[in-house]
Length: 96
Image (tube, rainbow, N blue to C red; front, side):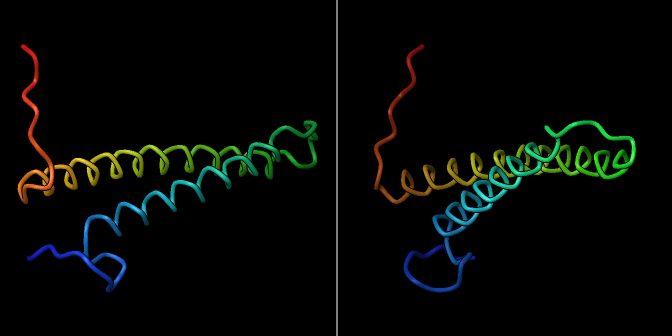
């Protein structure tokens, strides 16, 4: 599969995929903030199931954030390697 740059579909290149994952992370962070605000309210026995549902949503958002953060780091590594392979970036030897 050839990697090329330029306009096209959202996942035609690593940069656009990295940007998309970054936008997803921002949306997750905003949603997690909203969910956290809902969990800050007073504990009411009548809304216990609703509170449990918000706790589950918060947990799932945390998991999703972790997975997407890892994906973003992997995409960033791939961008760096692609640039190095195409001579766009010098490989700096690591100190021993």
